[in-house]
Length: 214
Image 1 (cartoon, rainbow, N blue to C red):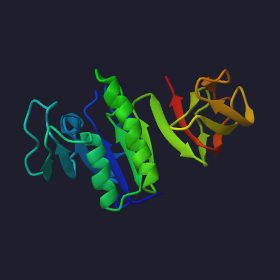
Image 2: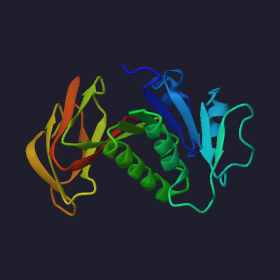
Image 3: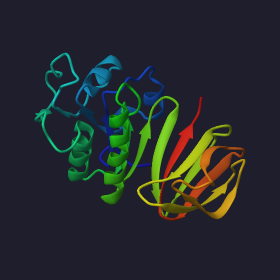
């Protein structure tokens, strides 16, 4: 397992209803960057961030005292979460967990955070976008191993490419080197894990893998 010096957690402003995601991903194991009002979530769950970044347009209270804060202009080319990822990459982190970055009132922000996953991947890192029930991964010519999540729902979509070639092992509907295409009739929605050990492998292209556990 990577050490805290190697791992970065980014906490965004989207609502987090329970501490479950922080029980799975202990903030003490990460360098924690809060993006904008994500510092309010950190405070609510007793998490002390290492860095706060943002334009604070979604925050009603001033940032925490005694924590390093980088104020950004409201008018800029990247989101606060993307800037947090850029700072994390610049600091040498290559393993990321993004929480508080799904849901809320802004679907566009959730979609923009998929671009943050892509940015991290293109800069040699790996990342998961997680909340209490859902995890999102971007795979490029690689594999996702899933252990101990029998019953979870798994959906796979091409991302940023017209097609990806995939294989599934340990899922209800297995595939072997089949193509999933945008607008195609072989859709990767709502498969399920039926074994203690399962995997999705991407042989060609880039795939967005969504794992949902109620």
